[in-house]
Image (cartoon, rainbow, N blue to C red; front, side, top):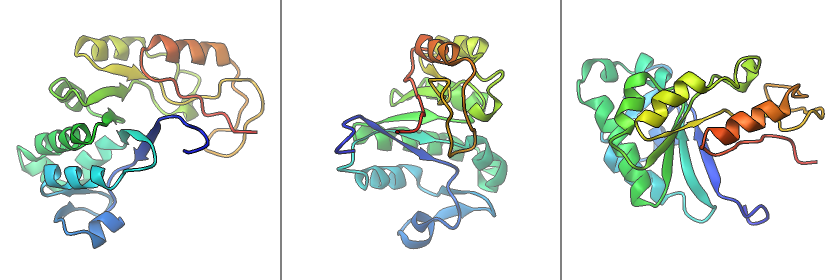
Length: 196
């Protein structure tokens, strides 16, 4: 971060039941085999974001949101827990001057984002690994824009140079299209080219 001097985004998949946050911090959790949700999301996220000082974090990306819902029984049986989770995440981020990106959300997650100014965008595409159609964000973008959040196009290779390391090996066959769609979305642009 000190060399790049750019804002950083923290990517978090679903909260794992084996995470150090779950195993070693003083918060109670709703657990499943694959995912976890704090019992008091606002208290947890307020604390969590205070732990992220000093390295340039500006946005927190909560990925695999559907995995959380599909695997944590309390999200399916407690009528208010999902709202408390999303609200706690947004309040925690806002209280530390940061924003939130939703990834792999269900439509009701996206709709709830309209109530939380800290949620500035949500991913509007599938994973870049499916790049033949991954650039096509039009229909999802209209839904997101209508409720006041920006549609993020997943990261992409911005050149047709060979790329290695990661799930997708380059080159990108249509880097101009990927760049144009990401730029026109109004959200952040995420080139993920290697640093050579």
